Amino acid sequence: MAFKALGLSEVVLRGVAAVGYSEPTPVQLRAIPLILAGRDVIGSAQTGTGKTAAFALPVLTKLGLHGKCRCVVLTPTRELAAQVETAFRDYGRFTDLRTTVIYGGVGYGQQRIDLKAGMDILIATPGRLLDLMEQGDVRLNDVQVLILDEVDRMLDMGFLPQVRRVVEKCPKERQTLLFSATIPGEIERLAGWALRNPEQISVGERRLPAATVTHAFYPVAATQKFQLLITLLERTKFDSILIFSRTKHGADKIATRLKQANHSVAVLHSNRTQRERIEALEGFKSGKYEIMVATDIAARGIDVEGVTHVINYDVPQHPEDYVHRIGRTGRAQKVGDAFTLTTTEEAEHVNAIERFIGAKIPRLQLENFNYTATAAFHEDAGAGARRNVTMARTSKGYSFGPRRRR
Ligand code: AMP
Image (cartoon, rainbow, N blue to C red; front, side, top):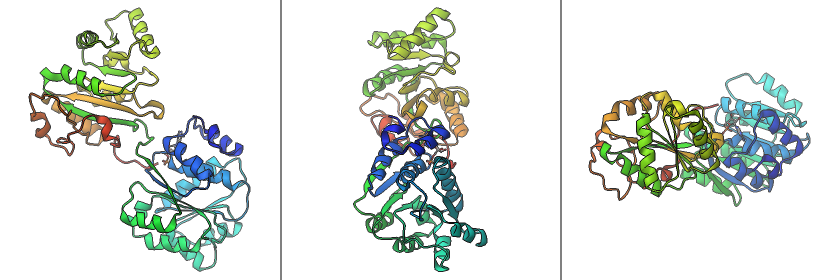
């Protein structure tokens, strides 16, 4: 679904096109229509999901033309305040709406001048905003939309009392949007007090590169690998799966056995003729084959729309290959799953991958699978090692790499 269908104004749509977004992210899809309809919203969405545009675009649309200060955004840090301001300016570049940002740790002079010049949207950290309000430099009497961003961080930093004071200074008749990655009790209470009949939106998937992929390791004995693969396939709802094998011979063997199990399978590796490779790729793209088994080299750079799952039958020996492989899925913001079958012999490569991406990958166990050896689950017990879940799909939200901020 395109941005056009969401009800944003023409000028805002031009701004969106200028920054180069082609499709709304999940949080944008959910939030934009609600915000345009005037609803209060609690969004449990993290940075990286596109939440800034999720509130900025409808607010810019609603404000329309330049006037009084009608929107206030509270953020925990000056970095985030500056970032949110840049976003408003970027998206609103074809409007005549004005934006001002104020935060602590710098002089008051310029901020007073900026406030005097007038703005439609004010982005601020709570402490400095209260200071300037007390000194009479800014009033919130005309605020129509109040946005509380990253409230969990404001809570951590002890800012909730200031946030409350700012809320109290806003008109009662207003729209309030609250964003927070987590909603602990205190934030729920704040929401109960500051918001009116809010709609809840929860979006776990991040939009950072490859972060739309949920990935997991499935420890298993080497002798049970194929059986586990077949069981995974049975229990997974997929459109198209790319399976990686370390060797060409291995790829052929997996393909043959999958065919015997009534799957439609293509094979891609460098021992096949160019014609065979083209046929495999085209067939996979068109949906003739639901599964493609490939070696790394063959699969580098191929861009197949809609690959929903990647399965590493063998643990990649180079950590970069892991990243490339799972990059085949989760493209263009679609959510994809990446499963890696791991044996104890491959522990070294497993560790190398986790070091490379800077994150622990959960170990999952298939329920009701007749494991012959359980050593793999216990020996390097990460938090996920003893989890007992049916499929990786149930473990949404593991992010790829350390938390990054843009
Ligand atoms: P945020 O969660 O607001 O910090 O946004 C994370 C990143 O995603 C930012 O770099 C945005 O510019 C980018 N972004 C937001 N929405 C979209 C979209 N619809 N398409 C592509 N990129 C986006």
